[in-house]
Image 1 (cartoon, rainbow, N blue to C red):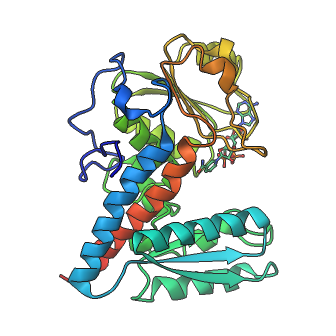
Image 2 (image 1 turned 135 degrees about the horizontal axis):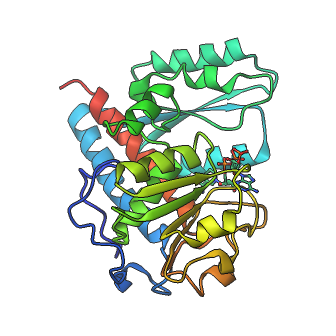
Image 3 (image 1 turned 60 degrees about the vertical axis):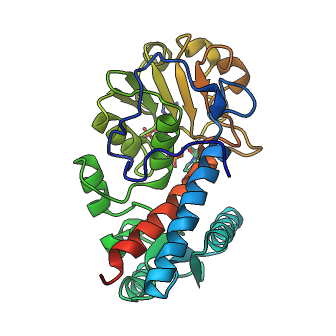
Length: 314
Ligand code: NAP
């Protein structure tokens, strides 16, 4: 059994769990196995995984079939191959079937779209993941849009994004969903906080900004054209770094007592935040590795089971 309590099962990334306390409350130190300032993504992911495994087993008992996640891997980028293999292993340990659809690096957009459409129409598949990034000749947006919204467990379609942004039930991009789950688990009350998100990518910065806005934070989204970023960060109660540059956010930029989420993952297991500096100022901070990363896959599996449950005949 994990020691981290999960938020109530009904609490999606866009709803407001009743247990969330006001900003400024002391973190519950039992959440962290090492240092009360650390937000332990591995523990949070383990709790999500445990709940997902139980739901997958209940689904299999009820319907006679296990939830199934299909992964489309275009080309042989080593990092993508590793990520997909990792996701398949996690599926297996949760009682979720996985199907790999490998396509050659020379695949055209039309071929990739056809492969994804076939999965969208396959009743045995409940969730579809198109591993990002795809080769340059492939129109990634067109391939994403071939995913049936009911199977969009990675939250990449326009339909999912719009529903998430409007606060409707939706599949949510997994890293942002994991970030919100981390914040909820560590009782960070989001209403009224000034949240500064650095990065505006479609899979990370933009959706996490919308989710925080939906939870009544006051959100500033920064990007490569933002002027005087350090002074904006200095006014933040919550900083989400999603830049893709190692040790980009410096400790001296942070207001003492800020909550810091480092979504970055750069070569050498280095985040986007200078951790050694930031940990001296932060009230709560995610380490890299072991912070945001583990929760991303956990959310993918959770959403796959949710899709299977919703698609199953009543
Ligand atoms: P991305 O698509 O390259 O986006 C980077 C964002 O950072 C862009 O919006 C860019 O602004 C902004 N940026 C770049 N330089 C900047 C600067 N000097 N000042 C302010 N903003 C700047 O990257 P991503 O896919 O969002 O990923 C971001 C990081 O998260 C990477 O380290 C990635 O490895 C990591 N990540 C982790 C997970 C996980 O599961 N843990 C999942 C996905 C990504 P413009 O829009 O103006 O170019």
